[in-house]
Image (cartoon, rainbow, N blue to C red; front, top):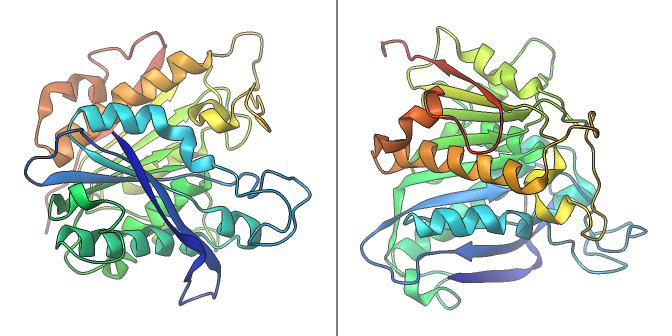
Length: 317
């Protein structure tokens, strides 16, 4: 079942930078809600903030907010069918006005604060999502971040910034999808170093936007992480096809592939992500290891050629 909430284009002002953002999201959930369900938050990356590409201000001075957050509906519906509540948030205000990755992390935390209130049966989301009041387990929370959103979710869950996560919320799994990876200042990876939460990274061999730099997130944690870290590289996949609103023939869609003569079609690329993400979140948010062979590469992903990697944890000490 698909629902949503919209508190307005200027509902959140970042306390650190002053960036003004919308609080808007689409929600996918099981049609019948029983007990407390794990929560997954999806954060898109940098794209047009408004449907009119001549827009220069937030809120949009021309056109309407661009629905990048709806580009993962296929993933949200699939995860909801496995018993998750999936929230895909809009970050158009950030895309128009900010290059601060901390802004993306803090917007996620603001949504989590609102969901914590809903989990207790109250708050600003209760009117729009009455069936979920008291039915979300804030101790089993995962994130997916695409492109700049990928660096955003790594920032949000990092050892350095984990104390900014709202009280009562436990981050149980982080998936960085075709993520941006660079350290600022160079050589200092502390803003995105995650060693106390399971991490998965998905990259693509023909990504014309960020290439496969996201694999460096695994390099960073070798010999340091106390929780498993995984990655998969999809041969011939590109950057934009993970988001259906960025994929031709959608309005403003673009094919960024560096190997257009052999690139994956959108459907197998999205199906591979869905299978991998389901296996990852099932293992770390539901304690269900049925898909572990997907994470290790023993069970191939459907209709793609891929390379997997696993970084084993070191003992906590």
